[in-house]
Image (cartoon, rainbow, N blue to C red):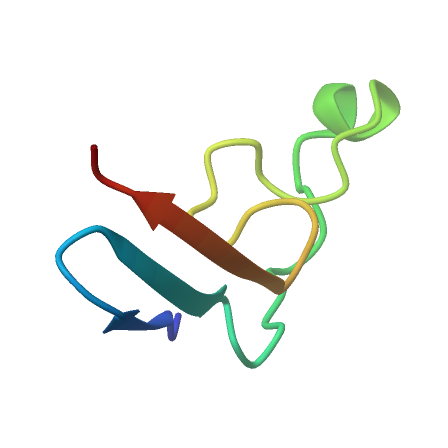
Length: 65
């Protein structure tokens, strides 16, 4: 199960900051089952919604002009 979280705080009509995380619990799939793709460097399935890098956190500052 994938869990993504995001929260946004609006300072005023112009500025807002967003803090979020994708794959919060750093879940990874089983190793790639296709021998050819594994040989070419694919650790997990290349079409996986989990991604290849595990969890990801971010901060975004936005301004509307």
